[in-house]
Length: 315
Ligand code: UDP
Ligand code: MG
Image (cartoon, rainbow, N blue to C red; front, side, top):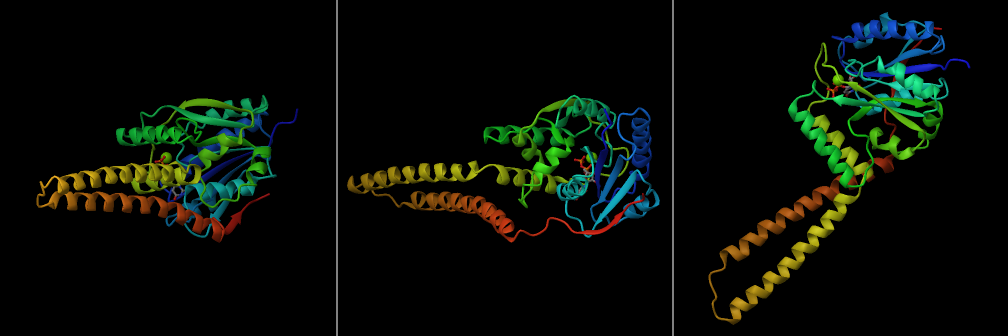
């Protein structure tokens, strides 16, 4: 059987501190795979520069070769969008692709196992972190909470899997049917089905540079994940609304009883407490509904998720 054409897609944003090292390691690995006949000689690395403001693009430019291509997005669009740009680009140009972070925190040697699974018929291979020793306690716990929450809301996620995965070209083609702007890739692939398998690895520490996922972006990703896959928060609002409604009827009955029984007291607490309580719940509910409405707003506009400024390749 002919060996498959592979593309490794790596989004990068302000990665000048680590990029050159990543490139040389990845190139060495790819050349080894080609030498071992594991992948076709036309396989390549595809770096997507997500609107970096440092020298990321210059470094990429200086490394262009037949096995290293680069796409420059016109502005910072976010990790998921950069990955999307890479996925769109490689669709129908390869037999399979692997997405990976440019900092190589995910063990790149797992790609060999991924390719073996692909050769054995898997269309999707998920990279799963066995330990999160490199992450802070805070990141570990918030991530765990997020997976649990998503599961409770009926969203199928692969536990401890981020965006390190292999996809066959067929999956890429089917993925092209998704037209949503509010993209949460981790939720999409498990729901697509296909023959799949898992590869386990230990996540390493970043060797240089710092995380491009501060708490704000992590929270944004989590909210995106929830609102694009689950309407459970809207249902919770209805339930809470109903409970509060029932409670206020009981309270009214109690107030009537107090008035009728003549034990009328200056009712400061009974007036102000419900005002705060109901006001708070209403604002919360409006906020949750608002976040769904804003997604609808974004989806109806159908804006392109990214713009490509330049593509660098060498044949
Ligand atoms: N990244 C990106 N655009 C962004 C933020 C991050 O392309 O707006 C890339 C980043 O360069 C890296 C990957 O996404 O290759 C994951 O980011 P990072 O390693 O900072 O996240 P962490 O591993 O800390 O969760
Ligand atoms: Mg990282």
